[in-house]
Length: 230
Ligand SMILES: O=C(CO)[C@H](O)[C@H](O)COP(=O)(O)O
Ligand SMILES: [Fe+2]
Image (cartoon, rainbow, N blue to C red):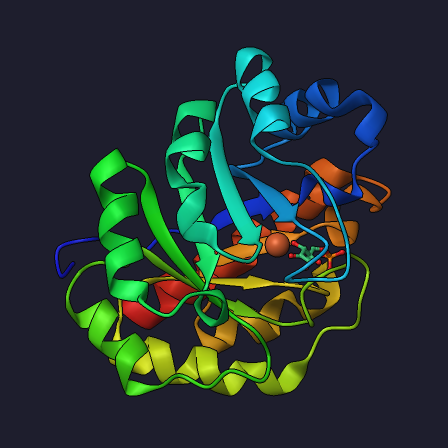
């Protein structure tokens, strides 16, 4: 992990897109400067909302290039690793709260070649077990939720920045993602806390100029990374 260089990554959440026209919407986001496409998978059980599953991702993969950053807000995420890999997912971010043996699941995801992400809800603290998983190099990214998972368009929770700061102080090159309520107006707060992977749904897609919003967010986050390293 130590020779890795931290990069600003902008990952618009397609949850806010016109879902009747998803492939075109994804292509448009790619052309407008998305680094990753953030795909929110919800099962109506782990969270009180439904979105799409691996069948939709497989269809998208046939038409859309780029990195599919899949955020699994589902119970029993261990049951879907191979299916999502076969569908074309590039990263499999499961919720820490949804599994008992996180280490085993990390290994199973790694074996497929997908990157491993672990998400934590606002009420979940960074406990020793999570740090041990990061220390074992089993985790590529930690997702600090800045809203309660389930819906787009919610209000950003400022107090989650303590978790981002804690992780960044311990792991200078770990990918730390933030997700929920992030807009151009609060990008400096997440950047200063140490997040480098930015998910934004309504903040980008409902912006008058999504290309400009992504470029602005990226510049602010990269500026913060560069100023920390100099
Ligand atoms: O995981 C999510 C919700 O659970 C979404 O990724 C997130 O809410 C993005 O939408 P917005 O930027 O509008 O808050
Ligand atoms: Fe998400």
